[in-house]
Length: 244
Image 1 (cartoon, rainbow, N blue to C red):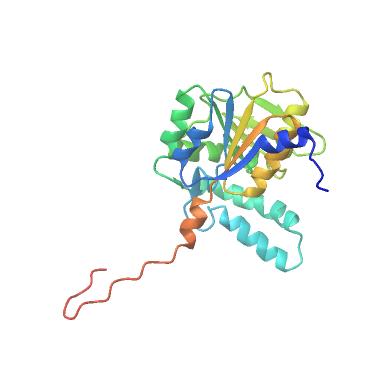
Image 2: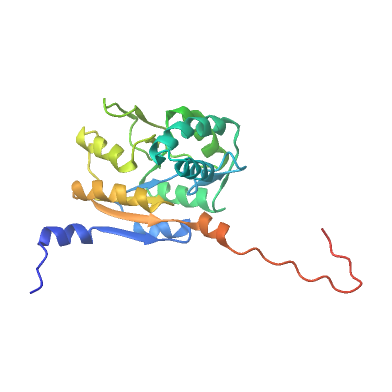
């Protein structure tokens, strides 16, 4: 005999959705007036120019350290400060040419729009400069500035519309935010746009615990670009020089 699921479980399951999107232009279709929207930064809003500037450097180095027997979390804690220090010398480029315009459209509708990054306060200044370079300003319709301090975690700041979660999972950061009653008016819906499903799942669990509808928008565009096979150069026609 098939067991019937409790109505409360079904309601929570229906209130959480994860969709894959191919463009930032799709985000607006998921939002309504009672929605708070968060954007990941690295590989979602922008990506670093140069091998030491992109977030892939962290992933590659931690994977290499893991092969030597070092726990991946420990490797990330050791490597992240070096990578974040490099950001003051790093330029970034928007993942899509329309990214800044799409974020502004959401803000102009009066929606609460903020950034949620795994970067720490070490790179706050360089992060804000990088956002400015791609014409994105998350302070326009953000929540008021709040500082979260808990004895079990490093200090995680929220400044200029940017949440910096540091080494803690993004969902845990928001669990603290809600637990400390720092949200004056609970949103009915939370949207997170991120290139990592683990971040979406982390936020989904916290939203469900607060009985908030969650929509995770999985945005792997840059990874899909990098996996595309390179186009082969056309064969050189006899007697015709091929330009460089």
